Image (cartoon, rainbow, N blue to C red; front, side, top):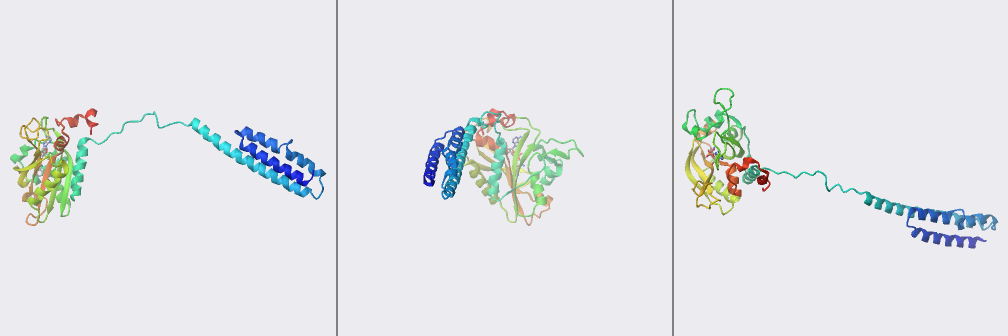
Length: 348
Ligand code: FA5
C-alpha cells in the first residue's frame, strides 16, 4: 500500500459510510454503521495497521488522511444520531400526548342578571350624554328619603310610598329607601355644579306583589342642576333617551302629575309593547306603561340641599328598571325577574 491507495480507500469508505448513515432508520442502524466504518475490522483499521509499513515520506500524508476520515465520520454519525433522536422524541411525544382540553369538569359560565344588564345599558346611554353614575345607601334616613325632598312629617304624599321602617334609633327615622330620589339630595350636598348624575339602585316598598309591582324593585334616578336649566332640557333629554334605548317603534308621552319634590311634575310613559296600545292586563287596559316620574327640581328641595333657587335650577327623573326590562324584552309578570329560574335567566 502507498499513500494514494490509502487515501483513495479512505475516501471511498467515507462515501459508503455517508450512504449507510443516510439510510440508517434507527439509532441501532447508526451504531452498526459506525462500527462497520470506524471499528476494528473497518477499512480505517486496516489503513492504520498498514501505516507502519509505508514509506516514511508517505506516513504524515496518510496520518493526516486518517484524522480527517475519523473527524468526518464522527460528525456524520453525530448529525444522523441527532436527527433520528429528534424524530424519535417527536413521535414519542405524539404517542404520549394527553389532550387536556377534552373532558374534565368544565362549568358553564354565568352572566349578569337581565335587570343588571338593563341597568348597565341605561348607565351607558346617560354616560354618553355626559352624566356621571352616583350611588346612595339602601338604608336611608327620613331627611334624605322624605323631608329634604319636600315631604314634611305628616305630609299626605308620604302615603304614596308605603314605607318599610328599620327598627333603629328614633321611631320611623331609619327606613329602606322607597325610591332613588334621596341620591338627588346626597349629590347636591356633595358635588360641585354643574351636576349631571344618574343613580341606579334597589328600592323597597311595603306593597303586595302583582303583575307590575313588587315590594323590592330597582329604579334609576337622573338629576341635572346648573344655571339656566329648563323644562325643555328635560323633555329633550327624555326624548333622546327614549329613541336611543327603545328605538322608533315605542312612543313616549308626558302627562301632568304630582311629586312633592318637582314643580311642575310629569308622568313619563311609553306605549305598551304587549298590546301595541289596544289595552291588556300588563298596561291595565290603558295602552301605556308608566316608566316613572320627572319634573323641575322644586325650589324647596334646592334650598334643603344648600343651593340657591334664585341662582340655579334643575330637572330630575326616576324610572323603574324592571318596567324598562319588561317593555324592552316583553317579560311579564314582574315576579319573573326575582324567581331566578335558570330557564328564564339563560335566555338573556
Ligand atoms: C318615584 O319613585 C319618584 N321618586 C320618581 C321621580 C324621580 C319623580 C324624580 C320625579 C323626579 P313613583 O312612585 O311613581 O315615583 O315610582 C317611579 C317608578 O318606579 C314607577 O313608574 C315604576 O316604574 C317604578 N315602581 C314604583 N313602584 C314599583 C313597584 N312596587 N314595583 C316595580 N316598580 C315600581
